[in-house]
Length: 169
Image (cartoon, rainbow, N blue to C red; front, side):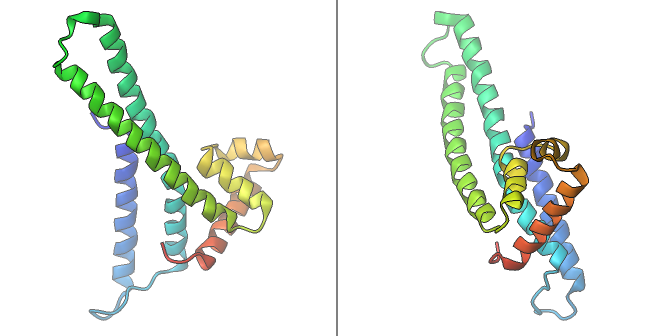
């Protein structure tokens, strides 16, 4: 069964391939460096910021699997032998969950460092609410008492600024 995290990873990969394809079509000579447009750079920044929510979604998927197996283990009680494949799978998923949680913390720290590069506090807050807390545009507007369209405009302006000032990802 495919998890939400896996689907998001595949979508990200497709977007990266599409961006690469656009850049390759713009290249005129073999061996020439591929030009990166402002739109491509902005998309790279946005994909970088999305990584945390994607990692959290994967962790949530793993946690759900672990919880389901633990409930099953509790129901079956002592009928499972210690060498049961179900118990081995539970241990494996638990280890994967711990690794994923560590990745989440690392990615969050990276994303927060990028957000701190933005000088304007309101723009930082928009990025935090969107990419750390995973809020919708409507909810961000409500939280900041701003019109949703204005939040989207500020977000676009912020991404453009980050794309110009951030070192290559």
